[in-house]
Image (cartoon, rainbow, N blue to C red; front, top):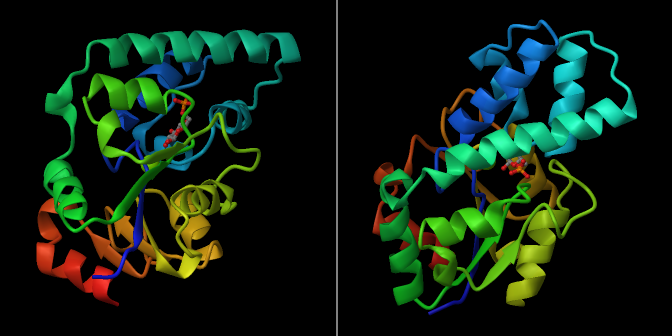
Length: 218
Ligand code: BG6
Ligand code: MG
């Protein structure tokens, strides 16, 4: 059997943390007298913390000093971590564990490719950290998605050629990063949002073992 690398994004693919990021950003937005909507939160998916703040300041037409930005970044993360603290493995998205177990049974490479600097602590909290042979996260990259760096590093860590890497992503920026890396991109979410992906599934419950096997054999 061939050995491929399966690179998982974290937020929105393994666990639904987007709602916690949203709550924390929304509370920060209130300090800018800005009403941050869930639709606008879509723009934040896959985007680094620093860039997310820049987008929010832009949306709110708010000019902040460097010092204020740094304070807000800490404040946002502290609030986000409070939500994460209360989270347990019941928050793992449906069938993620089945897919991880299937890939392990088939001896495939499995790595994380996430923009989050909290990735390791979240995976630990979810009891999933031992399922990842390599973790590349927001602490390891200099260029954010849609730059392919995070996935290229994931493939390198597993010593698998980029054309033998398969990426699971819920964000537009992440799908673009996978495509830019020359990898197979699999969108997890809505087809019309993730239309640049090679395949799109609403979630992992729709992805059969037979489909995963076909990716391994391709
Ligand atoms: C991405 C999320 O995975 O990580 C973004 O989709 C988030 O919404 C980014 O901003 C950075 O996360 P963190 O945990 O480092 O603030
Ligand atoms: Mg994501």
